[in-house]
Length: 380
Ligand SMILES: Nc1ncnc2c1ncn2[C@@H]1O[C@H](COP(=O)(O)OP(=O)(O)OP(=O)(O)O)[C@@H](O)[C@H]1O
Ligand SMILES: [Mg+2]
Image (cartoon, rainbow, N blue to C red; front, top):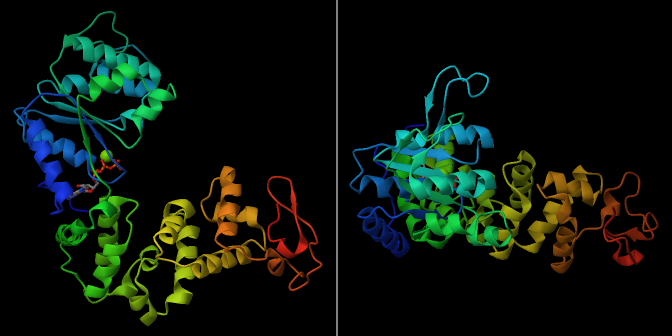
């Protein structure tokens, strides 16, 4: 994949225009900024823009991912370490905060920091002093602008005792929120055009397919959109992309008028089943929103359940894994199916029990109760 050389925010929607104004305003100051938003919405891009449009633009922008590292590694990543402080520390190492001197440090996924790391960060924010791992005293004082990002709700984490309230206020002098792509569908076409340019493939997406892409909910936001475009660019055959070339999960979002032509009924359940099975999509994140938005019908969900029951020989619980559902959500799943009349009698999928109404006269339900034979559709 080609790297973005010009990290501008692409999009014409009113919300994005407002965000660009806010970026320009906060770039003029040194205020600490917290950027929130779902995964893939462009939080890092916003942070880079703030840095680039400010007085520190000629100095480094240093991103640190607070989620991917263990606590000890994150500490030495941020503050550095001195030779001999742990096995393998053969020489002193300068931390990212020091590397970002006079520039900007971007603390990504700050909601994942342990309480101990939060205390160390707070101390640094209060006095600007760096104490490398293994050092007795502070090594240096640095001047960095701090921009943080998270897709978590920090106020909720404060209430739950997993994030320090004093740290939250300190990093959130200015709060910018990047809205999910589904709330600014006007940006989708131009983002697709931009993503195609990035691939340098010159593919053309026909209007029908564009309509489907515009209606899709994009749970993975702009990153997902870029991945989908890349997939189409390199898998496409003759340079033109039509509805039939779209990845399976997107097809389910196609308007019925379009999908009728493409044999919608059979395909939707097959495609959903295939994407769930591949592990790239999950029932609650992908299928459920499609159903709520009426992009798929209860018939489609029932067909999907049928495929699940076929694969598990009639075992509802075994379908959880298949559909990417947490075991704790078993009851929620069953309630959802019951509430929308999407449940399917499992008995016809049991080996040798096809069509026999006496095969499971009383069926245990997840809460330990039981159901009358005629409504007996689940089994533990
Ligand atoms: N408005 C936009 N215009 C152009 N590219 C964008 C836009 N928003 C996001 N992108 C691109 O989408 C990808 C994901 O963006 P980014 O990494 O900034 O998201 P994020 O919110 O930090 O996601 P995560 O929480 O998953 O880290 C990047 O390649 C970024 O360049
Ligand atoms: Mg990010």
